[in-house]
Image (cartoon, rainbow, N blue to C red):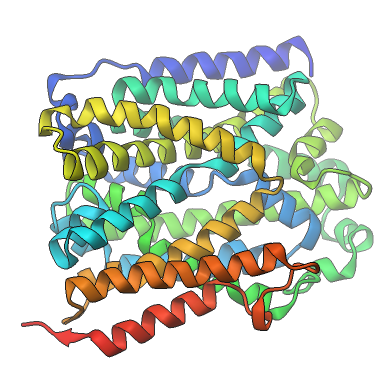
Length: 457
């Protein structure tokens, strides 16, 4: 990269800080003000924030597209559209009308403190954005030649400094800028790839034919497991936080519908660029770097810096949002709910939680080697643990008792965890009975609900 490219990256980072550090008011220091922006989120801001936050795993998408081609859409696209549609139809309005601040607020009201407490632990661990911190480190290593751990630390600290200052409102303001950057950057790379390399004929001639099949070399069971993991969307704290924060229930549902359309467009861009990377860079040793490597091949000075900035924006939008969700869980759902912190100290403890979550994210990122593995492992545990209790707390007239709800959450999580460990410890990496760990966890959760349910008035 040239000096001009680095100057563009630097200008973006300075602009991000300026947006993130805009003036805050006294009301922003209340629990509702700091965690959900006092429920003042507009529809455009809702869409931009949700779209950019939920698509932060950009290098993981590049890794999968490079390895498996079109299968990426059947793994990270279609199942998540379906899950988001279910959320919009059944949960979005109800979540906004509930007037809660966090998911454990709802679970405590419906199923008691034990279920809410276990959910808080699960949410804290699974919202810590280790995968995206790993991506930040990979990007910084590519851009500046730093060791992975140095890039991860510096990139993550830069992502949280303005969140520490302004809370949810700073997250949303920076998300809007990052939303614009990520779309502009990938439109640029897609157009440049078509112009310089060729269109569909070039791809079919240069990419293995298996990359154009729905399986992409994976087993059907592997594809199927992502349709279950995608149900994690129904317990997705970023969805709930933005539904709690939006001005009215109508905008919550409409915003998710609009977001699904925008995700479809972005999936087309990222999948196409991943295929161009595979066609042009057949021997690339690190698929995580497929998008940056393609940009280095085909983009001129200036435009290269702009695209690299769009990658940074896509990753940082996820890092700051999820670190803030984890921090909010710490501040409200641990310190306020269980350790007696006063309501007016929630913002303070959320800032403390931001430090704790950042430290944990860095440690986890440096332990795992694959972004996709992080998504798979944590999704396989959190989905069975929370899916049934949270969904039934909002939808339908069938409920469990508080004790059964806690048992449902804890036992299903343990079953999936034990199943996951069986694969990690096995010589060939296979799970018991050849079954992905998310399936037995979900089955156990559904069985417990079926046995313990009772109809409520």
